[in-house]
Length: 335
Image 1 (cartoon, one colour):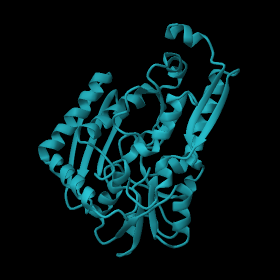
Image 2 (cartoon, rainbow, N blue to C red):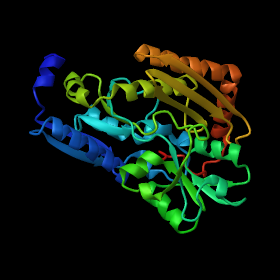
Image 3 (cartoon, one colour):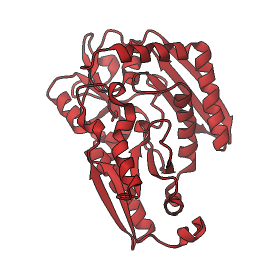
Image 4 (cartoon, rainbow, N blue to C red):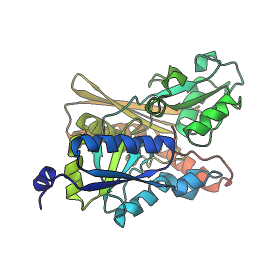
C-alpha cells in the first residue's frame, strides 16, 4: 500500500509513547488532540513511560549515556509495536537517530527563547553580585558567566515543577528555563523577562516538538504529514546540522538558532567554554532554502566555528567530562 492510499484511509488507533513528566504528557496530549482533529474516529492513546534519564539524578547525562537516555525506552516501545509514535522536545533528541527510526513530523515552533524566572528581580542585570542563578544547561551557564561573571551559577536538577519549587523555597535568586515549557503549561506569568537570543542563543531545536516513528512506517508518516511545519523543520535541520558537525552533546555549551526573515533563513551558532571566558560565534544566511540548502547553511556555520577553534573546545570539554568525578548534577532536558 502506498502513502497516498494510507493518507486517505484513516487509522483505527494510534498509541503515543511519552515520558511521564507533566510537560512531556502535555506535549503528547497536544499531539493527541491534533490527531483527533484530523481523524475523529481514531482511538488515540498515550503510553506513559519512565526513562532511564528520568531515573538518574546524581550524575551528568554525558557520563551515563547522553540525551539518548530520554528516548531509548520510547524507541523500544516503537520497535516492539507497543507504540506507533513518540513525541519529543527536539532539543533533547540526539543529533543522530538510531538506525530504523526517523522524525515523521516537526510541529510549528513555540517561543525558542530562554526565560528569566525570579520572585524578586526583573532581570539578570538586576541581580546583586553573588546571587545564585540556577540552570540545568551548560549552554545557559556559559552565556550567563560571559555577561555576568559576578553571579553564582549553580546546577538546577529535576523537572519543571521541581525547579520552580526550589526557586520558591529560596534556594536560588533566579532560574533560567525554556520559555516554551512555561508557556505550554500555562505558567507564562512566572516569566519575568525573555532573554534576547543575541545574549542567550537557544539550543538547537529549542521550542520545537518532533514526532519519532519507525522508518518503515510509511503509513504513519502519511498520517502525520498534515502536522508537519516546513519552515520550523528547515530551521531546526539547519540548527541540528551545526550541532551534528561539532559533536554537540551534553558536556559542550553549544547553541544554534535559525529564524526566517523575508524569505531567508538566518542562522547563528555559538560554542563556549563553561566559564564564559571564550565564546565563538558565527552566522550565515540563505534565501529560500530547501532541505539541502538548510543543511548546507548549518555546515557553513559549523565550518566557521571550526575555523575559530571550536573543535579544540569540544575535544577539551569532552576529555574533561570523561575524567571528572560522577557526582555532579545532571544537565538533563532543560525546560
